[in-house]
Length: 216
Image 1 (cartoon, rainbow, N blue to C red):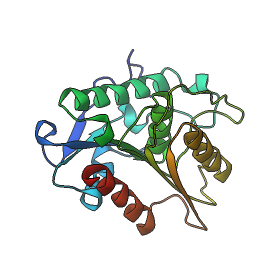
Image 2 (image 1 turned 135 degrees about the vertical axis):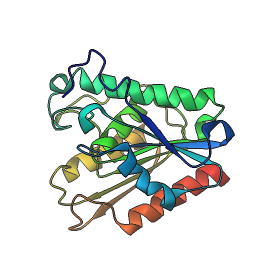
Image 3 (image 1 turned 180 degrees about the horizontal axis):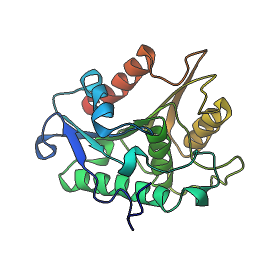
C-alpha cells in the first residue's frame, strides 16, 4: 500500500446526483477492496432521490486497509485510522454544506461496509441511516465494543450471505447486536448461499431506508 504519511487524505472524492450545496441529504458510499469510488457509485441509480447527493471517496491503492478486517487492529494501521479520518472529513464536508445529520446516510460494500459500520459505531449519534452490505465491525474476535454515544434510533440495514468467504456470519450477528445496543433500529438479513455480492432484496431495503430518511 501507499507509504504516504497520511494515507487516503488526498484521494479523489467522486459525486453523483445534485451538487452538495443544492441537496437536502447526502449518502456517503465506501467501496470495497480492489474497487473504486466510481464502481460503488453504480448503486446511485437504484438509491436515488431528487434531493440526495452521493459522495464516494477513493482509497489509496484501491484498499482502505491492507489486511482482513478480522486481523489485529494494529496490523491495519496507520491505514485504518486514516480511512476513518477520511470518512470523517467527507461527513464534515456534507455538514458544512448544510446537510442535517438525520439526512446523512453512510454505507458501503465489503471492506467499505466494514469501514462504514466502524465509523458510525465510533461516532454514534443520530444519522439518516447506515447501510452495511457484506460487512461488519472491525477487529479480531473478542474486540471490546464499548462504543460511546447513542445512535438515537438511526435506521440500520445489514445484509450478508450465511457463507460469505470474507465475512463470518457470527461477525454479522455481533455487529447487529452492538448497533442495536447503541440505539440503532437494526434490520439484519442473512441470505442462504448468496456469496460475496449484493442481491435485489438488499438494494430494495437500502432504497427504502434512503426514501424514509429523505421523505420521512
